[in-house]
Image (cartoon, rainbow, N blue to C red; front, side, top):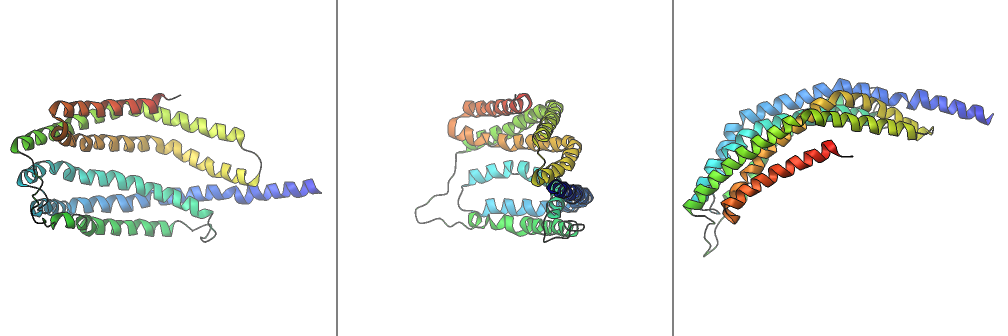
Length: 299
């Protein structure tokens, strides 16, 4: 009699708990694309529409501040276009990645949450949250970002204090080094990312399949383990689909980071000299190359 009860309980677990992961997976698939589109399209448009606004207020903050001198202001005027122009690209990639992740995983999570309807919970509310994030991004881009610069823009020098500044020679050198660093590191990071994109995708597939079948071999027959096994299966299927675009998005982020990292070479030229600045550029490239090799070739 005890064995019969155990069998009935196991059948209930398979029919009830085992179906929840697949239900959550289906809801995630339904919600993923709308969530990504709701955030990706409006936020990218907002970043482009507000780009003149961003450029004006950013330049105004640097021109109006008393914290830095005229030479540093001139340097900022020449270097600011690089991060400002790349801003919409960063927003585009980040919102696409975040929107898709939110739309996929939140419905799966809320399928197991007793506070939400098992069939509909996580669909409508995730769409609403995606729209809410668009509004928050508008407020951040239009108001909050520049409130962070308020103290910098309105800084008052105390008696006897002088604005921080550098010589014209250092300004010229820093501008040239910073610009060349952004170009060199940006291009090199991009080349490395492109060359290692396919190997990185294969490595991601290898790790995914290795993890999944090792997990399956260890999975017992307890209720909790079965539920998690059921939950992992649809995620495993989906991961096989999203690995290529996911790795490509990471590669784009890495490429963009090269431009921003290289830009800081101007600071290293000021602090440590031109030779050290170029050494630093090469160190960043070498380090990025080694780290990507570790990811692709790790045991």
